[in-house]
Length: 396
Image 1: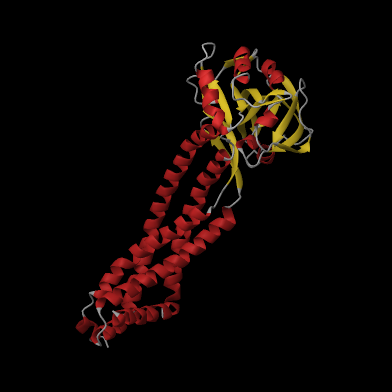
Image 2: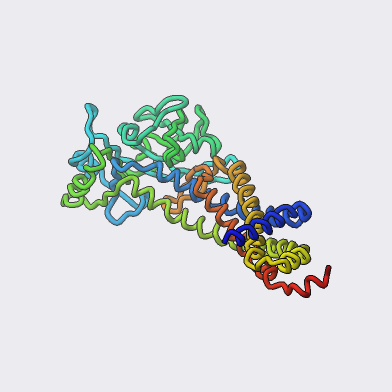
């Protein structure tokens, strides 16, 4: 066993020392793998960033109440008297100001993107005063909150960054009102930062919604109070509603988008990987051919074939590992934290988010590189091991 290991070490060191003599082909193989890993990690970081934004939006001690059968706010509708019953339900957190529940209205407005100038769907949310207590971490960072009863808008940080005409002091005409932007807010990177907030009582007549709402966001006494709250509403004969945790609601909203990006990204990465594997095959076949005499000599003096196979595989894996690390670093530097926006198919509105090159994606990218290296080195390694010693020695 010790002799076998020493043979593996000796042949592997010989192979690695000669890489510099084949630096052109070796660099080509490594950079081919690096390109695949960069694309692989970058594309999947879109899904990771979108999912991170959506998951940070939900809290297990906050519930969303929609009309029964609705899977999004756009499809829901609640009467004013329904929202009162919901706010008074057991389990809702109460303060001196009353129940911590906000009946809300949700419409889509057209706002030009900064990057392209094309108009995009941006959510304009009408909220009640309790909305600032229902959402965790909402903080005004510029200007002030909108005043109840006035045509004033509070803009999320991400929306202000991605779209034009939303600076503090600017005006926009949406519905039947002219709105003035009076402040900007953050909410810990949640989806709320992609929204525009105003007084629900002002938004209703502006879009002729009468006295209706689309959802009620309720802060509960604790996450454990959710079953009691849900049972009270779903068994109330006055209501026809569905109740879901806020965290579950946004997790479901992100599922379609993340699945689509992950599938498409994987397909692109596989197609590119085929080219990278052929590049690695060509490089390793050339390396084996260039060392025909050395391999034959080693076999002639007693080296077994398995150390030769392993040494070629290790060289291929080394080049792939190098390429994988380079690709992951490039993806992190170029894309991590890059902010953009995309359409949320559940709400048909834009959601701003940042690419997230997570440690898990980096590890997956490097592992993917090693798989390419293993495939690219396997057949040349087998060829080296099966090389007829006598024929190879004739070339000496």
